Image (cartoon, rainbow, N blue to C red; front, side, top):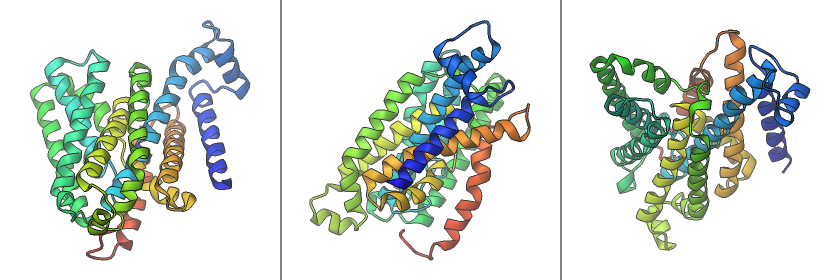
Length: 328
C-alpha cells in the first residue's frame, strides 16, 4: 500500500508539472486560479486551461491505456517483451489513420480517431497469429520478430502513402512519432470512455488470463475457454491502444517498462497489476512529456522520442536476460 500511495503522489506531482511547465511558467497558485477563477485576459490562464489541461488529460488516457495494454499483452503471451508499440499494434493504428487521411482528408478529428481501432485490431490479431499465439506457441523471440516485421511493413506502406499524396506529410509527422502537443484537438472524452471500456474488460478477464500463465493444457483443465479469453484480451488491448494512439500518436516502450515494475508492487495479482500499471504508465508519460519540453526549451522534443530514449536500454536489458527458447 505504501508503494501504491507513493506512485499516486508521484503522479500528482507529474500532473502539477504538466500544468505548470511551459513557455510561460506558472506557479501552483496560478494554476489553481486558472482552474477555479479563469480569466480569459490572463495569458497564463489561457495557456493552462486551453493547452496544458487537455495535454494532461491526453497523457493520463494514453499513459494509463498503454501501461494496462502492456500488462494484458504480457499476461496473454507470457512474453516480457510484449508491448503495443514493439508488436506493431501502435503502428497498425497509426497506419490506418494516415491511410484514412489519404482517402477522406484529415479535417475531422473524430473520424481520424475512429480509424485507429480497426488498424490496432488487425495488427494485434496479425502479430498474435504470426507469433504462434493461436497454437499456444507465442514465445518471446517469435512474437518480437513478428512485431518487428509488421512494423517494417507498415512503415513502408506509410512511406508509400506519403509518396502518393504529399499533403499527408503533416499527418505523418504526428502519427509516426507520438506527441501530446495536439491534445486540444482530440476527442478526449470519447477516448477516455473507450479506454475505460477496455479497462473494464481487462479486469473482467484478469483471473482467466492468470490461468493461462499456467500453460494452455492446465488452463483448459481449470475450465478456461482459451479462444474466448484470447479474443477478449485482444479486444481490450485494441480499445486501450486505439484510444491512446488517437490522443497521442504511436508511443513505444510504455507498455514494456511499466508492467515489470507494477508486478513488483502488486505482488503478481493481475487485477492489482493493471491498476498500478495505469498509474505508472500515466506518470511515465507525463514526466517524459515534461522533460521533452525542458531539455531544449523553448523547443520541444516529442514525448514519443523521450519514451524511446528511456525504453530502448530497458528493452536491451530484458532481452539479454531471456534464455534462448524461453516462453516467458
